Image (cartoon, rainbow, N blue to C red; front, side, top):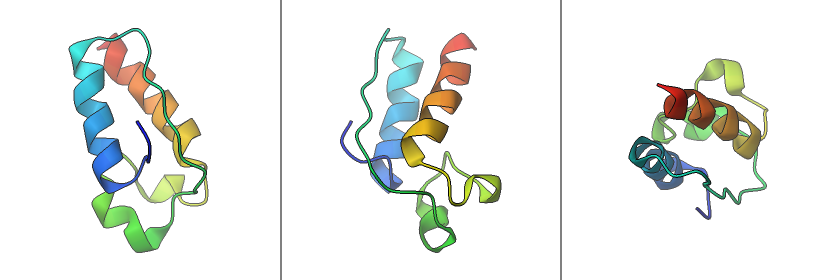
Length: 65
């Protein structure tokens, strides 16, 4: 998935629900409060962190459920 922002974060949640073994994430941006309302998988405690690192951790949790 190219882009872990508004659309990308939602897409990855649905992809994780399908159960693939690998999801590639490409994004070199950090989470910021100005676009947090569009990025449904992120929250205030993630501000300033790399989107891909946070996304990877959260997707692992979703896949285990």
